[in-house]
Length: 345
Ligand code: SF4
Image 1: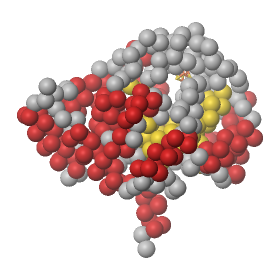
Image 2 (image 1 turned 90 degrees about the horizontal axis):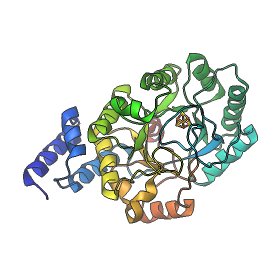
Image 3 (image 1 turned 90 degrees about the vertical axis):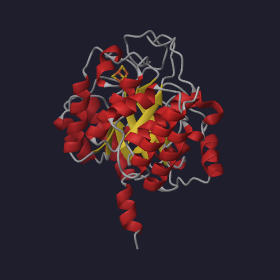
Image 4 (image 1 turned 180 degrees about the horizontal axis):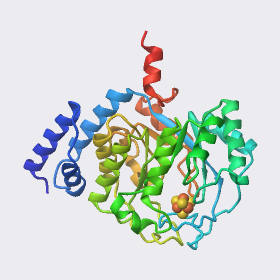
């Protein structure tokens, strides 16, 4: 049941956010937690924040699963962990030609970036697999169809230095959830190892992309923790995933978040991270008929094409949705300040 008191308070916080302020952590926890207010108040502010920063432009990116399965880590949501009894395709690092083809395909979909994603804990710069990935990143960069992004697990200074030299512009490494909930999600590496990877990438001059997965049993406070951690790290891109329970994983029986809950997460991340490129990846299908609402809840992008081991809806459906909404996706949203500088006159 709706309470006018809390709705009025939400409105006041929203006015502060629109004026350039921010919700306090405790306020954010309350907004994630309570449902007795008009969540459409969140959407109005979130949509305005998106328009203020990005106008009508929507970021599209694609990914290629460049090494599938066999990961020794134990992330509870992941179908590629060898500790979980899933049935997925398993293969080693794909060739640089295959990576270039995937980049061209992504560009053909209207995406400006291809994320080369591999299953695994991470790489040592001297390993054969890492050398192969460097060759692939360099090939994508030379081809020029799409920006080369990557998600390769835990990286150190030498690895990110080599990736930067090969032309990588953005490294993804999700924090996945709030710090205090992370041990429930993964026990084989730490939250701090993830944070260190992001800091190493940033220090090497690579843009950082980090977000998480929702619907893993975390509570509202954990969601706020994640949003504020990403704010503190000043990440550039924020991918939001909504758990797709996969048979054989520890979360196989998890109940997907409701459409309204998903939209609320997107909107509150926009409130907390008003200028960041927030894009929605896996789990969009849980929204059903409400998929177009993600932009009015503040998302500035979507991942197009299939996910790592699960299907996305068709690219043509996504592009039709954007077209019907009057949204533009022909130009890169990445580094919008560069775009603004280039078009200011
Ligand atoms: S480290 Fe990555 S690939 Fe490995 S189990 Fe965790 S999420 Fe999956």
